[in-house]
Length: 362
Ligand code: DP6
Image (tube, rainbow, N blue to C red; front, side, top):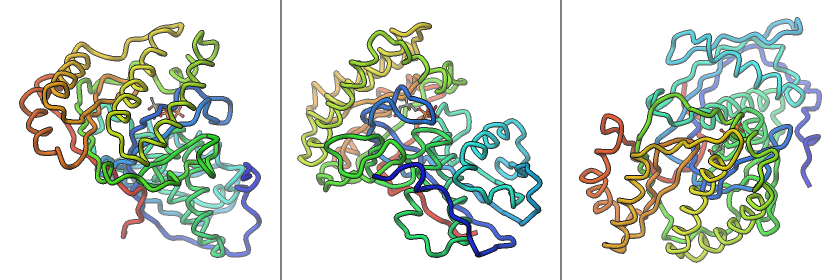
C-alpha cells in the first residue's frame, strides 16, 4: 500500500536554474460527496466525481534558483496582476507540501493564474487552482528527477493537490475519479484520487453538466468550517457509512448505465450533504428559494418527459444539472425557457465530463 513516505522526495543530483511551465486543471463535481475530514486532509469517507472540461484554472509557474535562506519566495499574479489576498492560501499550501518537496525554498516562483469561469460565479476555484499548481510543481520535480514514472508524476500531483484542497485531488485525472479508501475500488486511497478502474458505460460518455448560477455571493460557509461541522455531528457515523454504500451502488451504476439509479443516488447525496449542514451546530441553510424552485422544475420536467435529468449541489446555492449527451437539445431548451429565470442575472455555464489536467504551451 502506498503511504505518505512514498511521496518524500529523495535527494536529487540534477539541478535546474530557471524555467517555466503552464498547466490547466479543471473543476470537478462530486456524485458521492466528501464532507468531513480528519487531520492532514484525510477524508472521513470516500467520494467519486466527474471531472469537468470547461471550468478550469490555467496556471503558469516561472522559477529561478536562489539560495535557501529558510523562506518561501513567490509572487502571485491573478490574470497578470499582483493579487496579495491569494498569497496566504498559497503560502499555507507550500508549507503543507514542503516535507514532500524539500526543493521549494531553493527557488523564487512567479505564479500567474486565471480561471475560465467568472471569479464571482460562486464556483469554487480551489479544486482547479490547487490541482493546476500541483501539476506545475510536479513538472519542476520531474526536471530534478527525470527518472520519475508517469504514474508517480500524476499520483504525487494528486497527493499534493489534496494537501491544498481535498477535492482538488480529484481534478488531476479524468473522467471519473475516486478519492478515499473503498473496499470495492481497487487502488483507492485516502491520499490521492484514482481514475475509476472499471469501464464506464456509454450512457455516461460526454455526460453534460449545466451549472445554474443561483447565487454568486461569497460563500456563507468556508469549506474548512463546513468540514469541521462533521466533528461531533449526531449523524456523522451513519453518513460516513452511507457514503461507502452509495459508492458501491454508484460503481455498479457507472458500469451498467442504469440512469434511474444514477439519478436516485446523485440527488440523495446532494440533499444529504445539505441535510448535514442543516443538522449541525451551528446550522446553515445554503440553498436559496431559487435553488428549490429549480429542483421542483427539474422533477416536474423529468416526470412529464421521462428524460433522465437530475441535479446535484455543492456547499452553496448553485445547481448542477446533469444529463446524457443525447438529450442535450431538449434539456437546453428546458433550461433556457424554464430555469434561467431563477439564475442571478440569467447566468449559467455549460460544461461536460473532461479528461483532467493538461500541460499547455507557454
Ligand atoms: C461540498 O475540497 O473545498 O464540494 O479540503 O477543506 O479544501 P477542503 O474542502 P473542499 O470540499 C468540497 C466539498 C464539496 C463536496 C465534494 O466536492 O466532494
